Image (cartoon, rainbow, N blue to C red; front, side, top):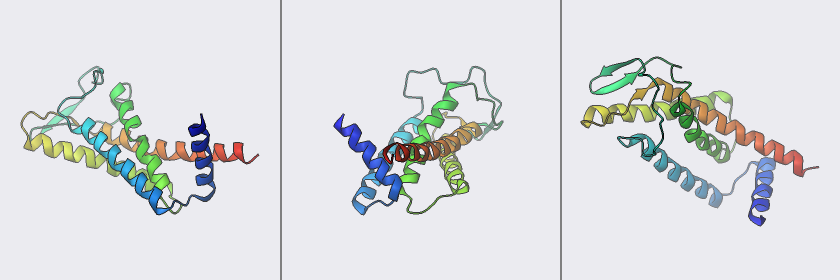
Length: 171
């Protein structure tokens, strides 16, 4: 309970100043690196490592580019759990983007960060599909969209949480 109160107090102070000392910035960078390793484990293993039915209920429209199956039709997987798990997976990236920034970040930069996150993941999957036999991860435009959504939602959800906590504790 004490830890929760201290965490909330810290978030309120962070929201007031949005200035982070170098030691805490290093801790956040370390957390970001651990998060990156976890995301890499999830997206670069040949099979999804969790026993969940995250695949599409029907086979999406795809084309083979070399040895890589590429899903090129956007928004055809909105009803699948895998789409929404990708959103949740990248939400911490948006939160850390907010925490690591010293200045105001505009929506365009948050969206660009999300898109680049998704493009980077899918590009590496494409390369691995074409260089490793049997890797078989789908390169999917829907994953790029869901990763971008996750970063944007994570950024603004944390920003909203900070504002709410500031109003609660400043009364």
